[in-house]
Length: 201
Ligand code: GAR
Image (cartoon, rainbow, N blue to C red; front, side):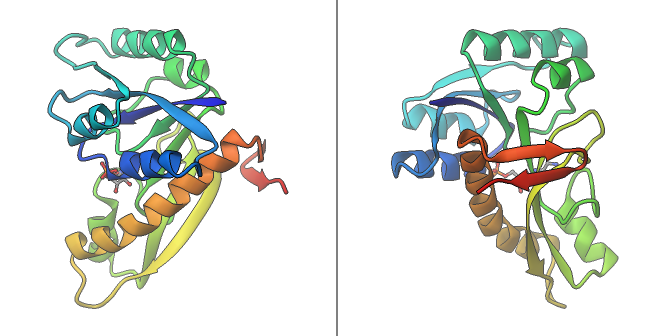
């Protein structure tokens, strides 16, 4: 069974979608650890409510980025993690971390990459005036929001949308493609060929 470690910084609705799928037997893997860089993250409460082990690693304890990531790697390895999911984890990981879990880190991003990388992608999309945005799951490589794309979902932008309303609509699709991407990974059905991710039957 694929052991999943989820990293969160905030409310954790994507984590919840994974936990719900797991409960329904639809995840193909098991979330065994949730790590947050914020002790007050709602995602931690969700994990605890589901009886899942949690760890808090804050910048206060590890102000140095390399030391932070070294500790994070240690915690994930100790728990035999096969897949790391970034579910609203608002820290940029070092190359050391990315190499330690090469092709084993999946991120969910709230835009159709490569458009609107970085933070507040939904607000960026509204400000830019695009008619369609959406969400993307991708493998994480050393460039930010740029690794091979696993799945995408398009979401129309209405003329009266603001960042909040668009974010809310995109979120439902995030939950679906994140669960599906994790399941495909756990079923060993994702093959990375250069920039492309092939979904095997
Ligand atoms: C989600 O919209 C996720 O796509 C986004 O943070 C939110 C977390 O929500 N991630 C990023 O913007 C990463 N650059 P959640 O805590 O409810 O899952």
